[in-house]
Image 1: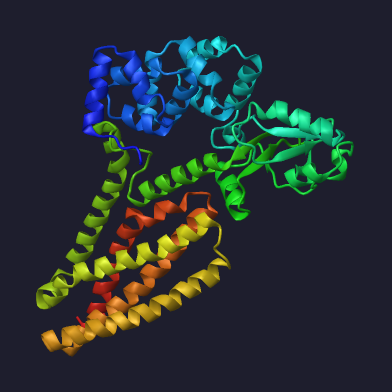
Image 2 (image 1 turned 180 degrees about the horizontal axis):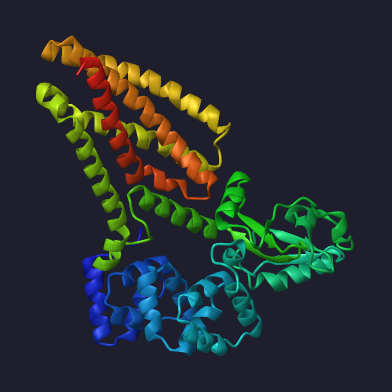
Length: 449
């Protein structure tokens, strides 16, 4: 039966905390998965959540803290002493420990690090803190299993047993030389069937995918996704083995990048959450809303230049929202496909070929839709010139919007700017303005005004 956070459970825990019935609390939560307990803490007050964190053993609460929402974790850590935080860090893998301590103020980081008793663990955490959080070094963990190419199979097994005590999950066995240079990987099957006195150099697999410690996190994610890897070793410029990155860290990178792209597409200029302050949310939204305001003013100004034509042919005014909407929709569709292709690194061919393909697609879609619009307006109004003006305008607008929606994300990507920005208000607003301008200029030409 799956764990479920119910109102009754929360009320029961609150009563137990108020009564300081630690024994019953431990019996109630002690055997639950850390992710389930984290879900419970999200529903409790800060004081009650902190009480449970202090009550449970560090080997479980360290994992619970990593599952919590970042804001709640930060608040709980403020209520823990430097020694209590250090105890949590000692139970975590070095990558998670570094992530947690990085959330603390700098002066508190030093106090917490000084309380860590395991000197090797402390040194590893300090090393990881020195790397950019968006690099392979910022993602990697120091815990791994490695063997020397000069060892025998028997010595290799003994050393692996010792190293595996500090590794949560063994994905790969890496082979290094005396200078710690990565030479390859070791198959567990080969290790088991090889005589114990044979040297590892005779059985290891020399080919192994790796990433440089300064590689961008997004690039690491693409490599692991392409080769379907559960873990990948991290090396320096001399190919010395520094650590490893596991799939769970990459899932977090992919999730964060997807959230960022979604927010950019929605017109949010910075990372925000629903629970953030009104001021922070306003700063994230206002720039794009301002862009929309400028776009609306521009569209109104364009329509103002054609006021005489609109007064003579009022039907044109009623179709303005349709033209603007079609321009925006086609532009967003085109840009979304390009942005997705760029993100997945599967966009093939030159910019010219991509524009030609989108141009051809726009011609097909534009022709079909413009014919339908012509038939509708002709039967409705019975004016062939007006129907012709509307259908030609729609046809041209769809083509232009498709080209703009394709070109802008490709152009931004070439300039090192996140192309996801092109799928939101930027494309919609620009296409609205161009669409309305094209619409009235074509209508003016066709109607002979």
